[in-house]
Length: 148
Image (cartoon, rainbow, N blue to C red; front, side, top):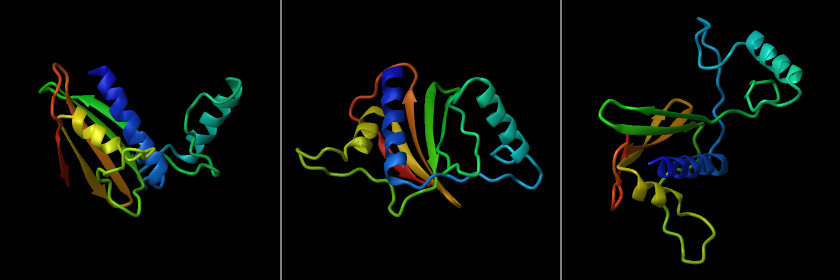
């Protein structure tokens, strides 16, 4: 299951980086938004510099081009849910039908074969592609795709 989860996340992240706009996070007026505030970003940047370089954290600086969010959770019913959220693209994420010699276009077909279920969720300014895997056992024959 771990190998399948890693492959699915790799495919979803590759698609996000290649086809979608980044997700631009903004602070909510109450200070509990999805992104750190400016003081937190400055502290993160200072901590990165003091640590001797880039620690891999997205500090959301002014030159920050955006963000892609990745999440996973183990549900009580034994399903692992994986999600990648970005700013969306000009087209909807759908499986392609590439030629035998094509260098790409198979990612969502791979996700569909490995996942029990997968789909696309839209919200203002963001698109989330999600997949579910059983924690115990392999799914043969692929999952179905749903949209919200």
